[in-house]
Image (cartoon, rainbow, N blue to C red; front, top):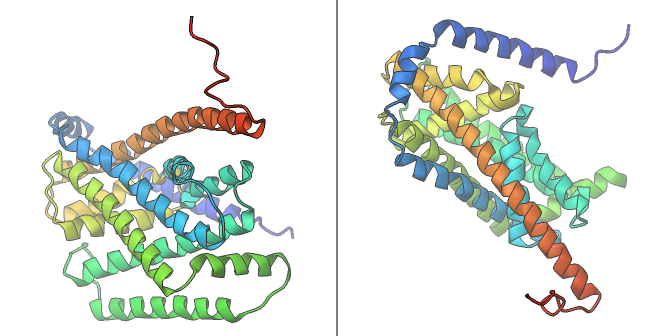
Length: 328
C-alpha cells in the first residue's frame, strides 16, 4: 500500500472546512440587509484602519531587524520593510500564513542572507506569534470576555502555564543540544538569533505591539459601521479569529474567518445582520492589505532599480550624479 503524501491530509481538511463554511455563508448571510448596513459605513474611520497596516509592518520589520542583527546580517531597514510588507500581504491568502516565508527567499535572492539565518529567525518569529495569539486569547477570556462557550477558566489558565513551560523547556533543550550537519547549523542560527534575555524581551514587546495594532485596526473597521467593541473584545476577536484562520488550512481563511467572526459578534449581543456585515467588512480589510502590499511591491521594484544602479556606479568608481545626461 502506497503511503499517503503528507500534504494530502491538510488539503483534505482545508477543503472540507472551506466547503462547510462557504455553505454556511451562502445559506445564512442576508446579503440585501448586509449591503444596506455597509452603505452607511463611516469612511473617515478607514483612515485609521489604513494607517494600522503599515504601522503593523513597521513593528514586524523592527522585530526581524533585531533578530537578523544577532546573526550578523546587515540589511537596511527600508529593504527589510519592503520584504516584510510584501510577504505579510501575501500571507493573508496562503494556508497557515506560509506566504510570510517569502521574505527570506527575497533577501536570499538578493544575496543578503543565507537560508539558515533567514529561517532560523523566522522560526523564532512564528513561535512568538503562536504564543502571543494564544496568550491574548486566553487572557481576554480569563478577564471576563464571553465567547459563547462554556469554558473552565481555571483549566484554561493552567493550560496556558503548561504551554509556556513546554516552550521554555523546549528552548532549554535546543540551547543545550549539540548536533552536527545542516540541522546543527540551523539550530545554531536559531539560538544566535534569539540572543540574550534583553533581546527576547524586546522582540516579545514588538510582537505584542504588532498584534495590538491589528486589533486596533479591526476595532475601527467594525466601529465604522457602529459596532462598538471594548478593547478586550477586539483583542479576543482578533486573536481567536486569526488563530482559527491559521489552523484551518484554507487559503485566505475564506469562509472560516466570516463564520468565526459572526459567531463571536453574536455572542456579544450584536444582531445577526450587523455581525454578518462586520465579517464582510473585515474581509474588505484583508483585501485592503493586499492592495497596499501590491503598492509596496511596485515601490520596492522602483527602489531596487535606483539602488542597484547607484551601487553599480559606485563599484565602477562613477559618481551617479555626474554620470547623468545633461538637461536639454
